[in-house]
Length: 22
Image (cartoon, rainbow, N blue to C red):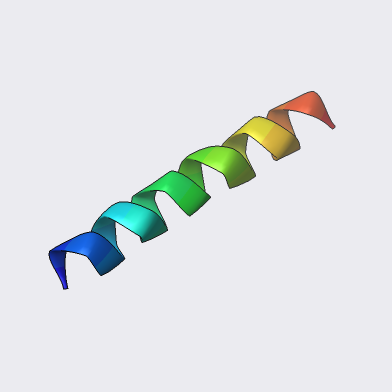
């Protein structure tokens, strides 16, 4: 579960990155 949450947090960061670019 910890790994899952870490991965999800990373995805959220990437999502924010992409939305900020657009």
